[in-house]
Length: 202
Image (tube, one colour):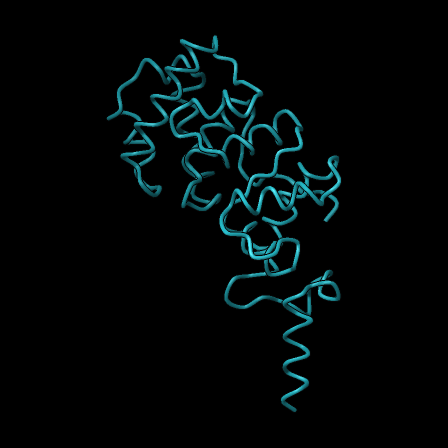
């Protein structure tokens, strides 16, 4: 997959930050429906910072956890204006100070906007990396992130995040992985084990 990039629509760091906050426990498809009218009404962090949580809620209510996300989006915008002069920071620790921004979201921004070797681990990445054998018995997303960063060449890390997400979304599906369409099945620990187990029962 030579072109591996986020499927979220955005035109600026601020827009990607909003989209990634909305994407928690929500599909990119749904987020991409929500964001065009959202950005039309709130084109900048300062525009968002000067509205009410009720107005934000009305625009994001079709996504998961709209109450919490509307609160976080408003808080994020206010802090971005007051502490960062409306400039999305490029440091993981500074990004994590923003409401609604956890480690995964901070890593997405750092890798997509600033091309930093940050590995964002969501449910797709966590599951696919373990299934293929890129990680071993990772206890949590942070453990998975550390294992992946340890072994992946640094220049591939920003793209590897998208490789794993898209692979999990379209090929290595949770319930029915499309193994016979998979380009890495010969290296996949889960596939090798499954084939061996199937062969041994015949």
